[in-house]
Image 1 (cartoon, rainbow, N blue to C red):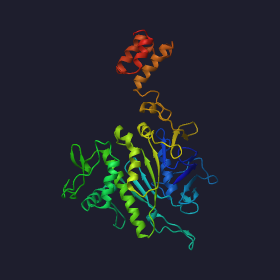
Image 2 (image 1 turned 90 degrees about the vertical axis):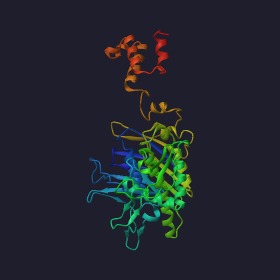
Image 3 (image 1 turned 45 degrees about the vertical axis):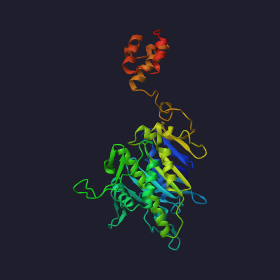
Image 4 (image 1 turned 180 degrees about the vertical axis):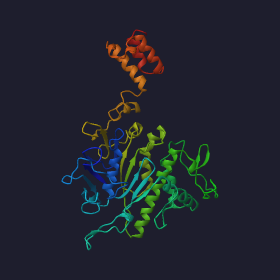
Length: 426
């Protein structure tokens, strides 16, 4: 598990942190471009000793004497360990001091664009070779799949199949009634958008060609409007199908790898998730985080799960109001300052509904209305305070403001009673 991150000389800020993460849920909010996704990338590095993409580039003000530095604290099975990486300008590489960080458990990183990275301690962990006094990567560093590979397959450079992909695995699991398929059914049910719209696999299909160049049998969903091939489902449903498949595939694959090594499987899981609300209807956004925790429970045998998640959705935050635990969960907010972005741990407060989340410091809206409606109400407020001269010339009279309010506000807007009473129109 990841306990702390601290960044110096790299990323959008000269210094960021220390960020003290909670044991279960870690929710990260903030405007675009302030570093939420970057923090997830660094969290992946801290947990796995690898980079999911290109390694981060140093800030211009860094020097050889004061190089960029990444620091983290990882909770292993029994002890906490400090992990540090320094950028070396000679070869333009980040060098991890003291070799691979301690084993954090199984790590999954879900990206906003559909990519996924997996680090499995049974398949990717390597230890320092004391005899050779060198880091000996006897196993692959990690596994990275793009959106197409999640669905269709991932092959090694020598042509071996690393992942058969959702389509082929789903069909095989379903036709053989394997434990993987039973687990997939449970995870899909947990991730469903509502009780009335469960994600249920359709009956097995005979081989069906959906295209002349694709003669594979395709799995289906039993949706309210009929059985639908999964490849033709909506973008939101497909994202949840990919999530369900990868959870099952990674967990079952880890157990098989551990069995072949004659060692006990891990009981710890870390999930990094960038903007899970992408493509999801508000109803589904409101259910996602509780559903994800239920999906992990369905996997079984996992004693500890840590989730680090970035979001722009007030509904995702509202969804955990009844389950947020200050002892196990944390809320972080990125803010822009003249010296660069900062991140602050905030006390979680129940706000009751999505509008109150929208107008909270986390999202920074003055009102949960259109921009034109917000401006009209601000003009009306100034008029009622005898400060109409501060308004635009066309909004300095009662009639002009009333006309604009009629244009931009709905008839049931809660501002109307106040305006009508205050201006004597009641």
